[in-house]
Length: 421
Image (cartoon, rainbow, N blue to C red; front, side, top):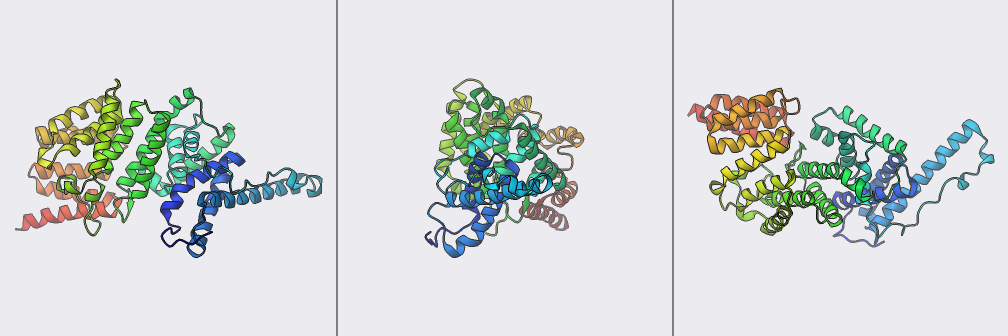
């Protein structure tokens, strides 16, 4: 083991390695829930030991080795407990029933992340359970973060994840790459999971930071892995393009103190133009293959924004047309919300406000801060500052993101000061 001061045992390295280690341990021991507990213990050991002892030459192998020993201890403990209940310990030697842990080299050159991704999207799970489990096991989100993403209480999400692990165990699923037919059946779930991980990284639903680059980068990395497996799938390429075109704006989205800077006010010179070029190339190739899906349309909208040299140069009629197509494909209320924003830019705020009325009856969005925030913006556009202030304050009260809350509160304060002048 070597000590390298430039390679601390930080959360970025451990987050990248965690799903790879979990995949290797699940492959070896075939117990998803126990393997995740063992990997968490190994990650904790690394976080405590590596800053003092240095990062190992083979950090993934080190984690697999430690997690495997934890699993072996767990299995021996379980066997001893069962033997105490039914047999004497001497009748069945524990070592004959518990496989030794894999050596530190086992699986160290194999990334099992993609296999883990498909396993978490097993057909035995409902789509919400599959997505929640993958966000936990592969994306590394906390249960609280996943609960915010799904707009449900944390206790509900904890139970959902626990049940998902149990169903994986009961299904007897083999930890191996699904057949091409199984891959196709699970792909929509896999892509939606990656989309949610990226969104949580790009705009964190909770906490003091607007962005979590580790999550966004992991979503992009995993999507590249899926695209390498399925290079001719237009929606995989479309999702990767969407991520790159969106992530390209990351450097300009926050100010010196981490404050939120909206799209229209961003310094576009700070955008990552190589990412924009890569995203547009991916999108162009995907669109030329024929059928167009939701991720390709979202990427096309992102490309129109990115290609505008200034906010006032944005081709809003084209964006409105693209959202019209997207809305016919999806019942996602966020699409309706964004369609309303585009409508306001083309047809005026009142036409957009009319489109928002049905969302008040949609349980997925009725109490979401973004609905109130968009209403506030539209009322401000319409010149009704008093109503806008109320919606800005309502939106600020509903978000758990401190930068978003600060921004929305500042907008309300700005309009209040304007009214006093």
